[in-house]
Image (cartoon, rainbow, N blue to C red; front, side, top):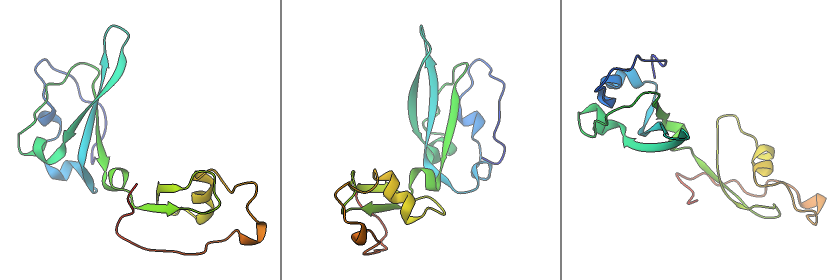
Length: 135
């Protein structure tokens, strides 16, 4: 958000009162957001998902409660590019790729190389750039 921070709670306050225009959400917000609400009696957190464009046009205007935390996801937080890590790693699969991430960091996310992986075979065999890799 352009101006993240605390907002004073008032009775009857709604989500749309905190998020009024798209420019407040720059740079590059995702379409999803969440309210983290502390639920009595033990104040455990529960998440209420919402659609940001719906809130901006006046739909899905959720009533807020004291101590609610509003989280508007960034575009790359919600729709991060994904990379498929396979081969001789402990947990092959699809992993979120963040800015500046190296191949070595991706291998560590996949649990590292298996013990029986040959040291000479450890390398980046193939790099495929695509729009999306299914999880």
